[in-house]
Image (cartoon, rainbow over all chains, first blue to last red; front, side):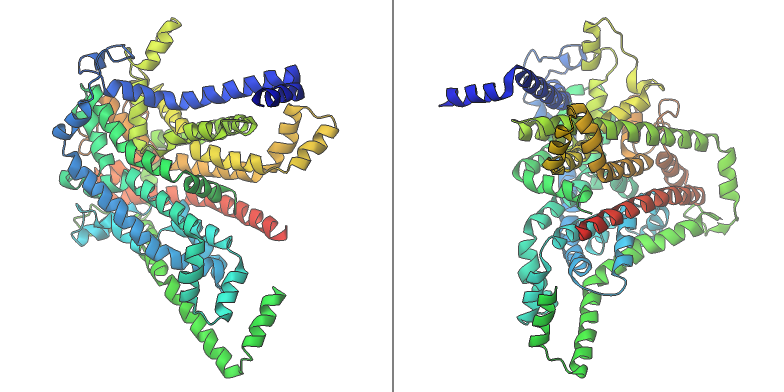
Length: 287
Length: 327
């Protein structure tokens, strides 16, 4: 059976088509490997011995799996992990509470000024964080909250431009007739949101939550601005940046930490690949 | 549309009084849904934006009250040598990164779009690096491009090429950061891939009937159809380049060999200020030298430039959504 199908494909493609198929697929595979290669190097270095990590060797002579444990003794990684989880976790919860109603109002409610508000959201999304850093730092500092994670978390409970934008894009794809039907059946807007829109937009909400979590998990500027003076409040990104400096002779350990910090994001991606891809395409394609 | 209107009329005969009451309730609902967002926007964008512009006309060190000095901060920019360096570095990234990122992502997406099997695997491999935190991604390339004994130099050595000092060489530090940014450009690739796969098949068939080969089909059918997404990619890359901070700070501080990412100012811009981007210099002035007024003036300049780029993007989005409504 398989042989027959293959022969048919072969005949349909012909010599030129087959050559083309091979060329495109080798190129695709080469591209994929090119993207993976740096991580392979990092992994191989992370399991080398201290002395071999210095050398030109690309392949470890012995596999030092213990490096991944040793980094926990060299730096309070558990503490940093806790701070990162606190920042990313609370920010994501806050974002969902504040952004879902706002996105619903922008996508499914009719009111004057809706377009203006949407433009403000897009504008805020594009605003470099450095532009507003000075007065914000000044305000948090006068409240005595610099050196804590609060200046990073609190804003998400009120406003996150990118999440509102992305959620709006998802909610727009839910047919208006569903919402109208709910209204006809006597639902309040709040009920239409919680009973109709939220369940239907679940994949979009998941994608937005993933992006929010990942953004805060990866954030460096925010933690650097507010917690750099207080090492016990550092997040993983901030700690990693200084780890390389503190252990600049220990490539293997620095790379072990680099890998460890990438694990949560990769695990999330593996479990929610579809949401990621949908979320990315929605940011760019579906205006 | 008409169907829903009729239905509403049937259910609600709506005497004038009731309608106005429900309209008021509607307004209250909208307001309730938007209250956190309005508050957050005002507190974290509106107010600080106005305050930044205000601070930019003052001398302010965070301890003593701000002192009004008019346009002095802006005038000082013209004599600040490092300001010029920072502008040059950021412009370098705006030009190089935008061209390289869009061309590279388009190339990769075009290859993936032609795959008949293994699309998921290749797409995943290309996207995975963009999940890496910017700090980690930069350190990955710092290892790969390590002078003398790094993997890249080992590979080059097989061809008899001796690599430069990479991140420690002022000529190679910026291209090194650009390489990191290309490695993590998977999100743009996926957006472009989706756009390419969305091109209607009939258009290709029509072009084929006219005798167009694969190259001409790509040039005359694919490119024009995905041009709105390409514009998005260009503007998005410009904004990314204008904000380039983390990769520059990490590359500079790691290459300097300093343990002190958070205290010393020497590591910023290392080597020889080649990685001193506009946001890095802004950060240094404001949060290392505590010259908040000057930092605010730089922030105002950054805002004006970013805003111009955003206006272009918003127009693009609106035009695209109008097309969608019309279809």
